[in-house]
Image (cartoon, rainbow, N blue to C red):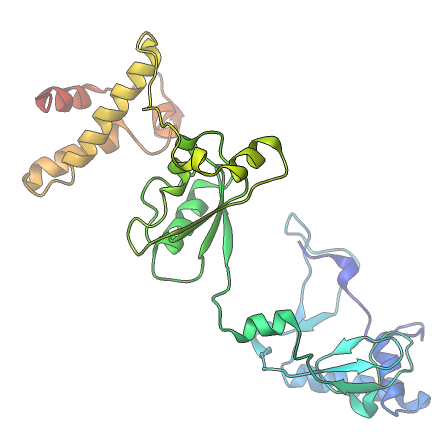
Length: 321
């Protein structure tokens, strides 16, 4: 949604002062010639295609009221150029990367003069950039991110592209166990137990090379204790995962997950015939669709009866051995 308050006047209809009117005077244009000069300058910018007309719309896609004749810089005409040093106003100390006519400061109602200032050779940021390090391009990867967007980010992260090279994740790490060429992990606090630590740290270094795992210890008793004696975390006891076998619901969920996983593996086995693979894939797609809407609706209407899962039962019985 465009914001009407971001629109500013080139020339005031009431003859009031504007930033561009001030700049024209600073450039040496006399007061009586300012409007003619700025009008001609605007026409040139439009003719050259640097400014293009736009129509501002609200959140519902409707044109904003009382806003017409709006122009903006054409983004396709913008160019980036390497810059060294800055031009700084002697009065207000405002900085700009370009020299203005008459060295006039472009700040509002400032009569200062610009002077060229070279970069500070001891500037930390510039020194860091000159080292040629790869910059972090982080993205959020949590359950709050929509599935389609999360899948797109995962493909970028696991692929050869550098468009996304860092993820900010929750401890559960929805990315799964194999995260491709992950070679560094930073934990913002000390995990509760050694098992939690190795579960998180072990995601890195599985493919590409040896990994680096960093853990930030906060000024709290838990983190301080492991900071003082890190071997308690690194060599502490790791209990095997366990759950209560009397919990029928939990046992059923694990059995279902195991069966479904195995069927998906069957659908990718090269030893099976093409017909078998197609049958397994079609059955899984029909009986276990990706979206819950397939269970609830049929032909755009609410289902009056449960889906027929007989093909899935037959498939499971056939591969029970």
